[in-house]
Amino acid sequence: MKKLDYGSLVAAGIAFVVGSAGGYTINEFERADRIMELEQEVARLESELQRQPAFDFPDDRQASAAIAKSGRTIRISECKPRQAVPGVTCTGIITTTSGSFAGTTQPGTLSFAKIDNTWVQIQ
Image (tube, rainbow, N blue to C red; front, side):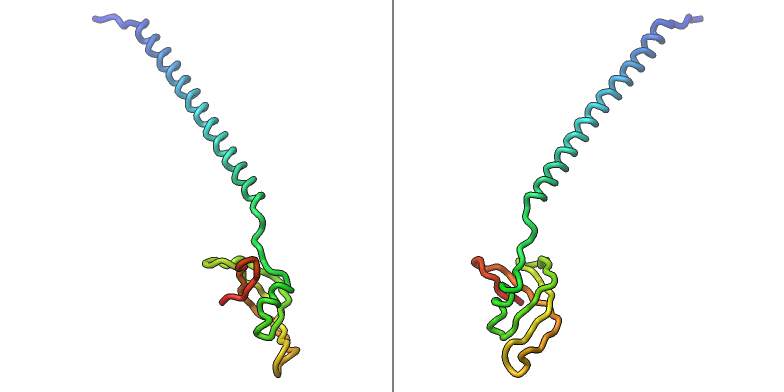
C-alpha cells in the first residue's frame, strides 16, 4: 500500500489559498480602477453639462419682430427646443395688430430659429 504524501497535499492547499487570495486582490484592484475611471467620467460629463448654456430662445420683442409682417405680436409663456430641426417652438398669447381682427388675442404655438443673429418665424 502506498503512503500518502501530506507534504505535497499541504503545498497544493497553500498554493490554492495563495492563488485565490492573489486573484481576489488583483480583481479588487482592477475593480477599484474601473470605478475610479467611471467616477471621473461622470464628473467630466457633469462639468461639461454645466458649461453648456441653456438653449437660446427669443424674448417677446424679438418674437414679435419676427412675426410683425403677418400683423401679429406674441407674448411668450414657454419655449422648447425643436427635436428634428434647429430652433424653438414657443407657446403664448398671439395678438392680431392689423386688419379687421386687430386686437383679437388667442393662444397659439409658433416656431422660431435664429439666422444671422436674428430670430425668424419658421414652419
